[in-house]
Length: 505
Image 1 (cartoon, one colour):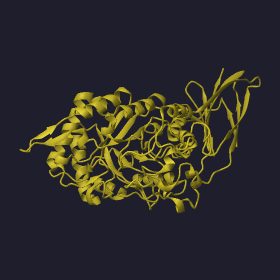
Image 2: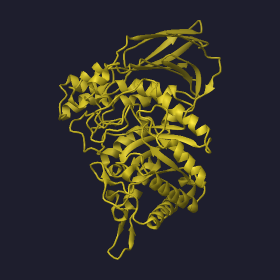
Image 3: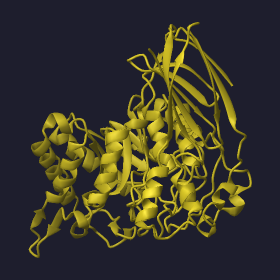
Image 4: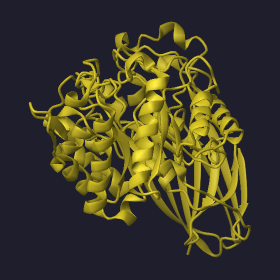
């Protein structure tokens, strides 16, 4: 693959929508020191603007309870600890409003190991009061100008009956209407939306609840500042038991789904609504072994690059393997969603987002598996990748929990190494060239763990080895270019990503 660039050429603006939002498990986990360290590392090295987590009103946050006489008691102390920390490290809440406080719930149905209540409120007036008090509290604590920059999303995946009792659309619309109107009564400048529906599943490009949600909002003249959904690229959208069972779709699945959303919204009463897709990964299973593998780096780079312009954010699910929906994982690498594992080791997904964070704000060129961008200081950032998708017959062996560590790569159609040759004109007399490389041999901590024998318990000495091996391979060269031309050839291995950063000297 030949890439020809002249530094004098102009380009097109690049909006890094992939850095807008990232997910986490439940808000209560954000009180843990280890989770906070993981998030702080992310914010130092490749910062996101927002974080979204479940369970703001869950029992472990101790926000709401009722005394025997029915008196309502509110306690914002744990919420304040979480939000104070987030804001101190430069990340804002993307607030998911749920689940139902036990004392306010109309039933006892719950989801996840930790038991988030999924039933409507027993008293709608008390729910509205809770929402209003929450909004007034955060405004008082952080200021109206700050909170106007947040987003408020009503519930999580109510189209699934284990996230919202009976997947009752009418009940959800009542929840949405009462919540959205309450928020707007406090301040019309606050941003609210939904329906946070589950993945498209077996209907590529056709959003669950999409058309009828938009129609109901228009009919009732409801506020809708953000439209949210979860475009996981699998043929069924959930793995609620955490068994690793997934059915993968074609490599263009994200594009099919978000273009379907775009078409739906453009013909709705809300054509200009912000599009925030608040959960996304290679699958919605917390035990999908693929999540730990080298596959994830090029998967993230390729999909985010190709889908730009079709949404305002695509939120990776999640920051950390400190994540307890199906209990904590039993081994250091167990197919968890995280960018980092429980021990804080950077996974391939972490590196995928790091590579994206190094791109410039101007696109000079793009093509099959490469992008050339320029930063404001003139540095050229050239990103190249070698994406390998699942084999056509991979779904015949999809019980990933039964696969031995390392065997997961047998699911993929492994490509040959790809060679890219960059021809760069107008560089001056010399350049500084930094090459940063990721592949199974460089920076894939999962592969190093497998080579260790995939220990269930990592000894301190082994952890130090893994920490060294989780980092990317970096080299720096200074090259004389008397003809004002630089030619450089790079070979990118299967599942690999390579970044060239070129600065004229």
